[in-house]
Length: 281
Image (tube, rainbow, N blue to C red):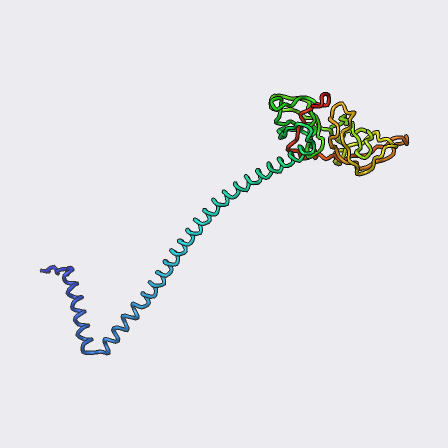
């Protein structure tokens, strides 16, 4: 009859371990050389494990340090981006303020040119569909004292006249338009001639000069202003400068070109003279 073997439980394993430890202690007390061998054996087993654990720990620590530095860099970048956004907004505002300041200075300079007239500055709020400012709309109207027929200046030179007006807007016809004639004169001797608008000619930035008398003392570079006999424009308003002059076939008159002071490619602000030629006030 087979008798079942008793299984060794946790108590048996513990007794075996204690026995092994007691045996090793006993042997080591009698044999120092064995003790040394035992330590060396244990070290050979444990040291590689320790070095491996140290390397793993170093790598983990280094990775954690990299992650921390990366988070700091990302936070710094976020801060810098926010600061840049604020600076861009401030720069945009400064540019707008600078542009407005330059416009005000230009208007003030034009006002100083014609102190005898009451004037009002205006911004251009619309234009024709062409390349140039043949006609345009300004943000001043009857509420500001603007009426049809008033002269408009830009950049210190004559730009045109008001052709239509509402309470808070007005439409201006430019002197560069074909068919627009301005009675003009030279400041050298006061001789009269005509400045004629032409979109073809203005493609070169010029206007036509017509009916310049051979007897008139007019030369290239002379200043040209509106004449006293103009029925639309107040006298003495700067138009531009003589660019070229040629003798006509009739040998009695000359024709040429004039470079206007107003830049009809780029208009932003204008000055409306609040006076009419008929009344002078």
